[in-house]
Image (tube, rainbow, N blue to C red):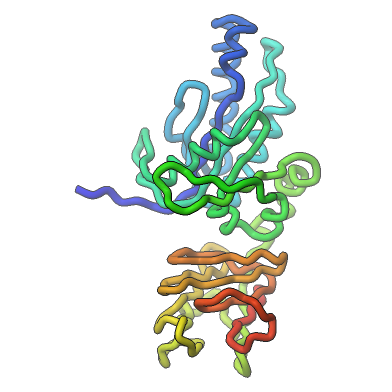
Length: 297
């Protein structure tokens, strides 16, 4: 029987340089320091509503349903590792890989492409680094995405397309803001989404039904064009934010207020701040009459 999958943020947290640790301190002390670190890491993950799936030697495989909480956990993990010297006098560095996607989750294991991609991110990360895919960066608000930078592209085994990779800049100002909650989604919950299309203005409230966009005349916003599907995308309110979900043939483009161009293909994306939506084609002209302008209030 086929097992159900769900969309989650997958995270591998690995203790860097454990082989050297055994060589330098001996088996007993090294094992004790690693065990202490794994316990600290698992406690931080659980405090951020994460689920520890399993321990694999000197690393943890875990997942979270909220991408922002996953980022907060990753920041806290790195900050704690940097500041902690255990009773053995050992300071350990962490390598963290993160990805958002579909996975099959069981009580003691996870399966699927998302797990493989996350493992690849962990392998790329060095001690003290957080490496994330564009898939998870798409799912965090601009205030947090501001602390990421494009790092590389990689062709991951089993995938045809290149994966865009980001480094998360977790130290300094980033750590202060993320961990203090000044960028928290709880402080950014939207209750209204103002949409403008040509001569029409639509105010979408949190308690209203989802809005369909497409060329079908029954859509809430009707957009004509050869690249537009009949029911191209849906905007809905969920868990304190408005999301746009693409369900088209040619995809949906979102231009965020911080200048990021996000391409969605059968994916969803939170609409934060001000921005523009284009159905089926890239945004080349800000004055394109087919653009839908949004403002999350």
